[in-house]
Image (tube, rainbow over all chains, first blue to last red; front, side, top):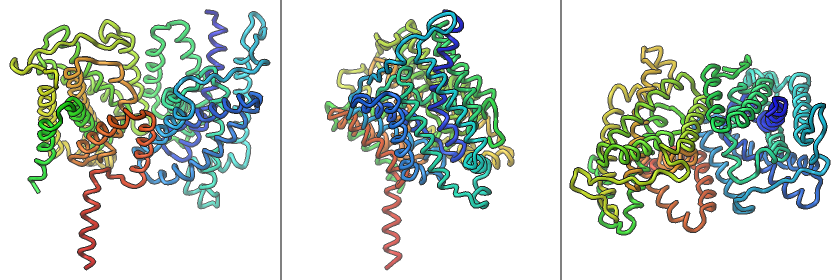
Length: 287
Length: 314
């Protein structure tokens, strides 16, 4: 297996992981809520995109609409489900969000059935593109470009905009931020909705790599949590590095050592978490 | 009040005579109670939030199953072997991961459980892989009581093991060691400050809890004579969490109540529609966190307080 293919496959997979997990990173750092339901939002985004595509909406527009809808759902969930949790312990948070995952899985199964829902790639992404030496799937290149663009946009939002400054202030010290007149509650709702929208977008756009079925929310949850844990909670750059690294490692493991891939992956995760319990690039806010 | 403690055990004996064809379901309930009780020790008392407790259940189940196949069919020897081995496994993994806390710890428990599940999936020679571990043959209990088709022996055997572990837990929780666990849950920093070896206590509690979960797994392997990959799965880790929380953590009989309600209702509801049951279960979990943090076992307290309040009001 040529090295470049493994690398490109791994990076495109890592980009999907990044798009889905980045919202979780920011909300877990900001709100300090153990959120086990993040995968459910990504999954709902994917299913909504399936419905829209079947109704004749073009793929990209469907993914964007699905993301917007999941964002609205996320805002509603923040107000109804997450807000009562901020003052409770991590156990209550884990259980509550676990319950939410169960509800979403059961609801989707009752509506759509337990089988995998295919989300076909549109025509212009289905072919191969010649990248120098050999042809490579356009869809994967598209994922890489999209991931880079989103990362740049997020970087600018968090590091350069007023919203980002408020967000960083609230992550570092929510009480002080409140005292300075920042509406932290609204910031929570907004950020949570944005994170969910990104997850929904990633769920739709990455459906080729992470196939949509009702247990998606549990199956890939470990993956998303690991990106957050390894990258460091609240650390957006860390999660980018972690998502790419895990994407490449997982892909390389699957290609090079198919039998040992799963051990290798969890083994690496274990070592990383033990070596750096607060993530690879601990931010100042990490406690 | 002392007589109240006899009530659950008398009920368990009554089930033995009344259950008829449902006795094997009763055995499942007992095993789930033991498993939930083990989780209560780690999570309820020591405050170790674990999402991978099924690793120990499955470990014990495979250990007992393989012991019966390769070494000897004696159930008590197999139980002792599985319990000890799982306890050691719990001590080893606990020593590794209990330096961390919070979300990192949750993910580490999840990663270890996943690693073990993946190992079991691939190690056909040891676990039978996807097909599960088959061909377990049990010798008669104490050389006298055969495991019969109706599950009489299995039920009484499981009940005895549960009672033994309950006595151990009861004793441990009332010892200085048990008290220190409650202290560590509430504030590791303060316990550390007054000289408690926090990490060592946590590892010890985790090992004990693992041994208990391993016993539950061993009982499951011995009474059903089959071990499948699902005994190591994330879903079982979630199930036992739900069972415990439903009943109430740190309540003497919370695990009893929660596991019984869970297994029985699931058995009835799953026959109708497994996913509708999952919906109810998820909603129930959320409702308990929001409105009834003490679980079902706290309903009695609430009722008592309401009564007392009314009396005081008069």
